[in-house]
Image 1: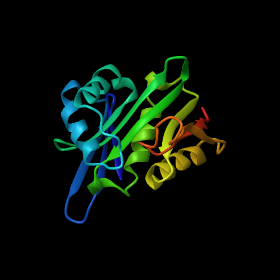
Image 2: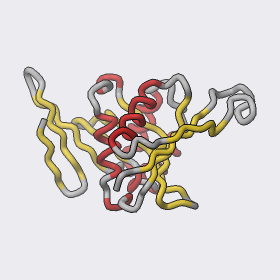
Image 3: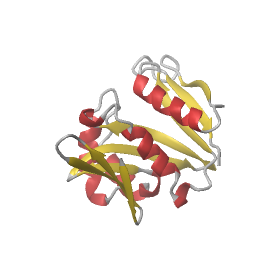
Image 4: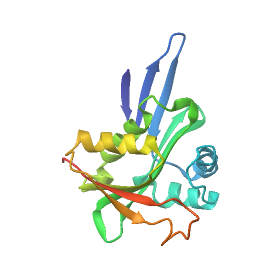
Length: 180
């Protein structure tokens, strides 16, 4: 695999038997909102927000979000933001990978690329919430933890009964200290 860095974008070249597919990792742009929305809609069990929300993520939070693009198709998206009261913590809201690109390590490459941006250079912790039945997210964030300090902590964040009145599964907070 070859990686080419161009400005703030990274191009990942994956050699396949008959062709080479380039995946570009970049900041989202205003025009990506609808494509991000469609990717999330096609990625159960992720919660689908309004397309307007995805436009805001692509515009207002572009420095803490990342898109994986192959050709004109968005095949991955990670949304995140710096916590308003703790600018050293990046909260990762959603990780969406197209079904055709799952199981290839793309989510980790995207997360690692995001954490290496100058805009998040002061981040010392990554937080995310995960439902109990999301093995892909657990694997991704356990890998991040193992690649850094292996001192991540999991705690109940929002309870299915108490907070969601039985309408949503409990969300567990995974807080990962980074080795910087």
